[in-house]
Image (tube, rainbow, N blue to C red; front, side, top):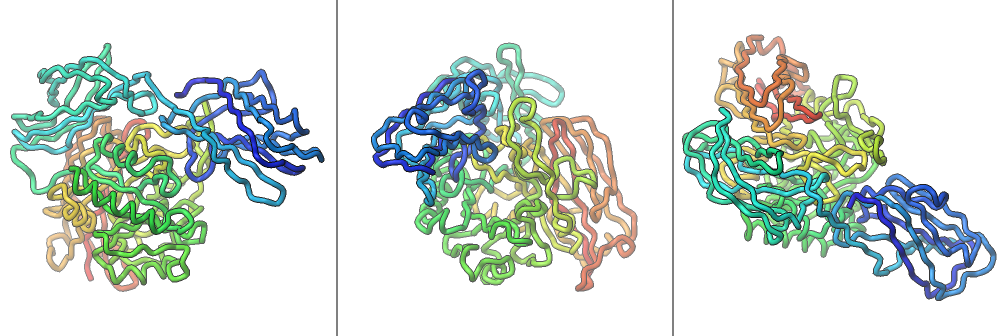
Length: 611
């Protein structure tokens, strides 16, 4: 894995190849063959990735290198003589750079194209196993909120540089409890062995004093620390759970099967999640969705992991319709496919979903990315209460010109010094989340992935394919059950980050993030609004911005991992409020948090309104 290697491929065809045929060798491309493989070329034997083939022993061929979303060499056959059937073709690839993604059956496609015909993928045993054995670091994942004496489980992942599990790792580690006062107490020694397959679960850990805690251990001179754990004197009414609800398996255009995908969610220490396959019938058929529903129910019943059924609706590249993830509370709700005339617009989709109000949720995805942007003039807040503020397509909140450091971008493929270069900024004015909020839409925030690799959904690195790393979302809910998670989603008591497990408490008076406050019931908020903020982060908080009606109301440099403050807004409500065409006046507030290493986090808003 991620090393230079030589490969040899040999096969024969049972049919003739006439003039204007072609044979292609493909390392990346197609619906389920996604990776970051580099160095493939047919031109210079002294350059990395050179492919030597014997096709030119049978015919005069023109090699064509195709890179980007696809990585393949197409050998166009130009001579008039037919290449007879049963010839053996060989490809020798020298010094090619293996992908960073571990994959048990990485496919190398052989495509044959006859004149005036579509390419045919040969069904050969042309797979290789991409493995890893080089430990780079450990990740320690713990619950974010605990109470005194509560027994919790810690998950320790042995990972390589690209966050794949190092399943062969074996050694002893000594676990310590660490407080925010830098006191260390040894808990116990634990042994990793190959049976753990890169994951060690340590149970029955408890803390007997309140405060901010960590688990920590040292290995070969490097120290590894968990996410922060906030230990309270007693159990709170709400707990904090982490999840990932937007990604793809090989039931649409991802690379993992369902079982492996869900196991990887569990192995990432998540509390809830699901896949969201595309709704198109040519991609995900009825029998596929039936299988997905079954595994969603099975995982929800047999694990401590909460699952929801969801899918991604998208009438692709149709101006203004956008891509929208749709989630169901139960299994009795039908799927509305965008390639069916009855549901092929956002307006039609909303009309047909409204009978299922409170039983379905629509969550818009990459709303401001120019290919697939969202026209906010078609909207219904009864169905759409959340929006994905961040994914691998960037931050959809506001524009690059206004200071967005992670603006919507399209893909760019590169390696080495180009690996962190991003594709072009492709923003659509009027389609940012702030544009929706200004219209008076009450949208809480999620963050996710649109991940297609299914191996490290909350890891800090992307696999060099030119889009941003996956995000992660948090939910404040009463307990870890489907009912409680669903209720919390509908109440917008959730938030998103670009990956770090940041604890965010954001309140106005007694009202929590996601709340909609009617002034007639809280008249004291007309002239004074007090906002309380607490943030506990695993990495440094660089800067905090309190946003009021899309403008920075308060801003503070932090440069610490812990932040707590109260802000007071004494401006008269009527003077600062936005107004909708329906004569609703409203003011909203949310947090925009800048973290080190270009990470960010956002609280869901709180609204104060007068009708």
